[in-house]
Image (cartoon, rainbow, N blue to C red; front, side, top):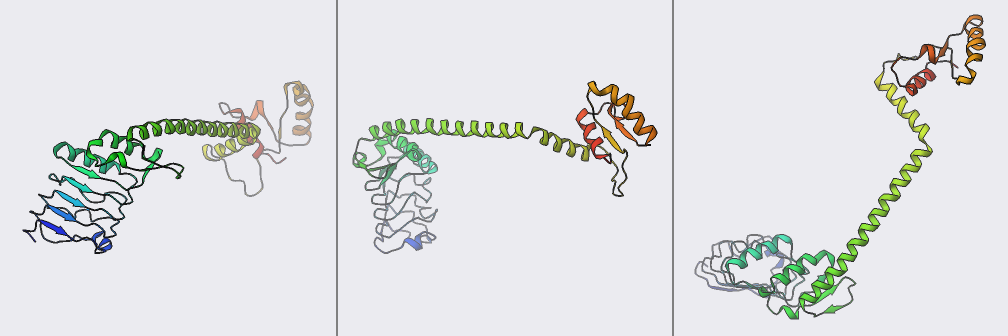
Length: 283
């Protein structure tokens, strides 16, 4: 195995095995050609080609790969990567970066023919990358593309495909932005309307909660209250309340009243004082 130069193990249904294992446990420093075609491979062990210092050709055609799952970063001598007749729709960002770095220091060529690429907004960056690196791809003008409606396959030049995608995706982005803004505005209006409609109830709940946690008040479980009654009145009724009601109730009836001018705590918010007064009187 250490002196092996060419390895052809095509058409052996090794897909399940090679997904988690290497085809050899020994280093293959002299290996230049590997043929793994027709093996129903859906993914390869990440380090399957580690130690292949002279590898020039990898044939992975006629499998069911959807992306490159193995590490390519150390394949500095690789010249041909045959991925034709697979299920590749696009490469991941990491794979694109790895191939771009390899291409700078090698004469790498990739065959992606007979893969049904997805021409959609999701794969736009992959299409743009292919256009920028078109010299890497063997027979790129014959590549087919499955459009977003899944109904039309095209063999248009790559540049025309990318321009069409950029146009459609720009419109799609604007539409999504408009819908998102509309939903956001609707939510704000709805929340604002509900808040305004139940504003007094919300204020009451707020002050009740604030009173519970911000101020010490004894727990009145025995039914005793600080005041017998809380009297709320407007300035127009002040003379009647002060001159008649308070003297009659406090002096004649011996009731203890809560009067805001007299019994509210100085410096406390008016709504907080009212809330406390309501819960500290009997009537």
